[in-house]
Amino acid sequence: MNAPFIEIPTLDDAVDPDADDQWPNPQPLPEGLPPVAAFDHTLLPDTLRPWAQDICERVQCAPDYVGVAIMSGLGSAIGRKIGIRPQAKTDWTVTPNQWGLVVGRPGVLKSPAMEAALSPLKRLAAEASKAHEAEMADYKARATLFKLQQESAAAEVKKKLAKGSATETELLFALQVDEPDLPALRRYIANDTTAAALGELHRQNPNGLLVFRDELVALLKSLDREDNAEARGFYLTGWNGDSPYTFDRITRGMNLHIPAVCLSLLGSTQPGRIAEYIRQAVRGGSGDDGLIQRFGLLVWPDTGGDWKNVDRWPDSIAKNEAFRVFDRLDRLDPMTIGAAQDTDYHGEPDGMPYLRFDEGGHGLFLEWRTDLEAKLRSGDLHPAMESHLAKYRKLVPGLALILHVAGGGTGPVSEQATLQALAWAEYLETHAQRAYASVTSPELSAAKAIIQRLRKGDLSRTFSSRDVWRPGWAMLSDREQVADALRLLVELDWLGIRQEKTGGRTATIYTANPRGFSE
Image (cartoon, rainbow, N blue to C red; front, side, top):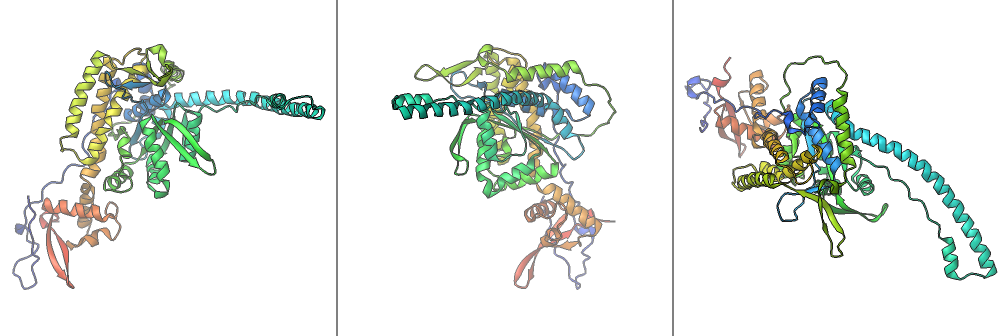
């Protein structure tokens, strides 16, 4: 319905500009956030389901937060040990590393949920740190011995030189003393670190790392800065899980090469912050390169409901089983579960070991992907949502591999694991739609804020766009967002619009529909 072109009467006109009968009834504004699917614990492997349920009951948090953190942790633990080839014959290989982002208001227990779900990884990290202390003690002893051996060898060579009784080859051989290797600390989680430092950690931990940031949008915004272009490129490469990267730094050495960057990423944010970030990213800003779309495990659940006090000990049986699962994945030998591996022209193992789908799983995946590709090519999706769903080509097979291996499966990835992964995709798509609703309908919150300002009297009933954004009110400080909101309110008959000559320039003037703002 087109909004009325309202001519504001002059004092000489007999028509009352506030007469209700000159206006149509305003149309209802669209609903806010679209609904999302509820999390179902059957999305998780049988081996971890009781543990996840126990966490949710004791923390009294949304199960979505726990589920996403668990899958991100599992993907990181597997890392580059094994991949999946979704097609029956090609060498297209997917790594199972995951990017997860949980959205919720402050106080909905996002952080405690994620911390509890990452406890197996933190336990592995603690064990690795303890083992590293012992290795360092041994290293220091060996380093002292090495120094003494060097001194002794040098003294012996001096004697031989003085006597002239040895050849150059014999002297060089006498100086050769094996230097002990500095033990590398096995790292599982990185928090606040630069991309260059993260790259060095990755060089020491080639299986990959989980970057865990409680407030993730702060990291994303820092990567938007022009001076952080290299860091942004490193993270984008890390999502792939199988692409090489080389740092060339004069201060830290040239050609610091990582054969395959594999980063998992997990964090949380608030609704307003992620909505603002997505709006700016898809409007063609520095973030418009698909970084946010890589968060396949993005959840924005409803967090209402009744709270109840749960004060009991954790389910030790379920927790110990979770620890065993993560420990098994940390020590995973892909060949023991039926993985295959390519060979190079010398016949040596080459590339990442992999599994494929079994016959049933392959059929399900092919049917799903056929539908996905048709949807992506339909032209019906917002470009941001289209880009997001395109990343599901990696998300779904990666989740299937995680579910299969974490559930104790061997051989080809099972039909059951594939069904679970497809259920994840269906569930996650509803949450993505909620997140991108701030892009496809960015004006809605601002439109409601304008109506509120009109009803409170902060805005006069006749105003310009400048009158709305200049005060810097919440949700109304962005000029483009205000313009979009005003267009929506005109379309829905909440406002009338006219052009007015002011000092040789034409101004757009809006008038509030009295039927929508009557006392």
